[in-house]
Image 1 (spheres, helix red, strand yellow):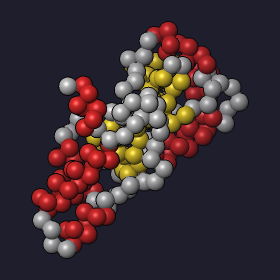
Image 2 (tube, helix red, strand yellow; image 1 turned 60 degrees about the vertical axis):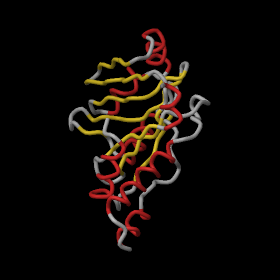
Image 3 (cartoon, helix red, strand yellow; image 1 turned 30 degrees about the horizontal axis):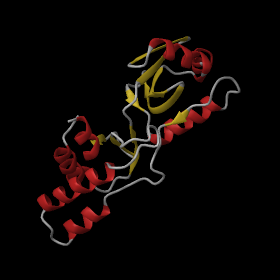
Image 4 (cartoon, one colour; image 1 turned 45 degrees about the vertical axis):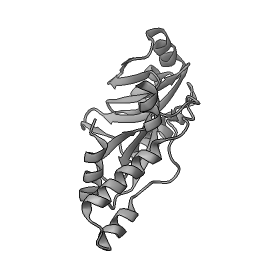
Length: 194
């Protein structure tokens, strides 16, 4: 994982005018479901028994092969619920964009069998960093803008997780137009693990 100063520098240098989908980083077990042709399997940090129950209740082995691509769905597991945070298209070697991932989940959920997929909580509005561009345009030094952006990212991460009810681990930022993604951890979460 990149450190927050490097991320802030990358944002200010190359990605300042992009919009980002912001989703929850949770301190929960993870699970990945992979589909190759007509076969589906799972892995991750989830308990194997819970993983198998999720595979059966969501009917992954039945529904996913009908969608027609080889892919891996990644998500968090809370009890017997699966919250998607990423879908990789194996044939293309890329992560689906937020828009393509939403269309994929809609296609999956249109099937009458199985439990419906839910997404990890997402900030309802895409976020960009126009204040940083304005500061640069007004003559503020790039180093000061980077420090401001770093501070803003850290502050944005603090809060209570809707998944766990505890201070959230952090946030994942995914560009809506490029493959640039990064994660930022919450200070209160980091203080709690130290």
